[in-house]
Length: 260
Image 1 (spheres, rainbow, N blue to C red):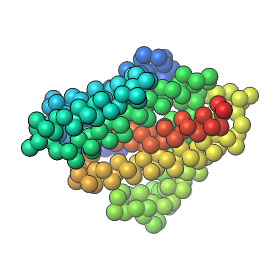
Image 2: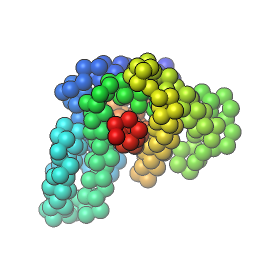
Image 3: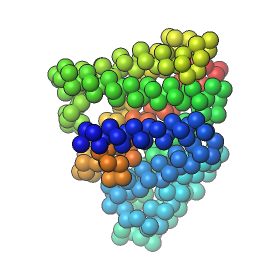
Image 4: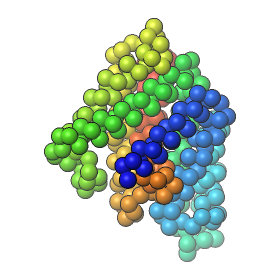
């Protein structure tokens, strides 16, 4: 199981890194697919059937957020579409479900829009790699430190396996690794170490919170994994949960620290 998880993780990372290298439409297309599948996984947890009107609207919503930068001015159109669907499918699709599915579509896609915006910045390739490094080093540090030290559980009612020692280990590794990685990816002449250390620190916290949000979501709907598409990992939400919260926060922090 661990071997399968590692192989799947490496293949997925290679795909994301290669599309990030190419950038442009290639990266946008990959992110749009991830967002669309992720919102389908949320719909599946909600018992929303595939190829229903509400499912199609949610997919379109998630994809357009990723692919169309100006779409944020028109979010209300698809939200109203979900509300209109509740009139004609009131027995299968409630007003509450419309709100949850709308939030799920936004949750699944906005992070990828912000990553595309980062990719288009000066040194965007290196900045995206730095964000990914902060997230992945958090996962690595949390796994190995938590496994080695164990101890008090972080939030056992939400995620029984996570420990305080693992959370701290992931935070420390990300804080140290991020400025080092930025010196490689962005270039040492452009790196202010303390700023990238702050970026790694904040992204690590946001990533761990994003992981817990998805765990709470699965607990609410009483499912073990969000899906089955990734062997050893479950669904795409299970693999990208940290990124969904961390990427938008990283984008705004980068704008504040480096762009203004």
